[in-house]
Length: 62
Image (cartoon, rainbow, N blue to C red; front, side, top):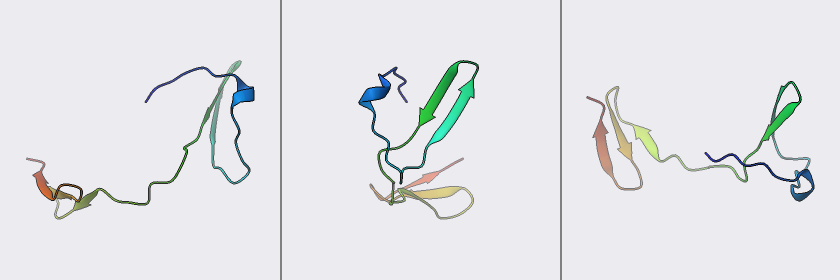
């Protein structure tokens, strides 16, 4: 994740967007995402194994 300081006039946040606001003293941080991830890349097969749906690879956490 990259962090950068921007001019507040350059950012447009619409009413329907969910944001997180953190304030510490005179510093305010607004976090928001550009879109929603609607795909699940990793699928659990069992307690110790999972499937990467992009590649079809089965990974073990041993």
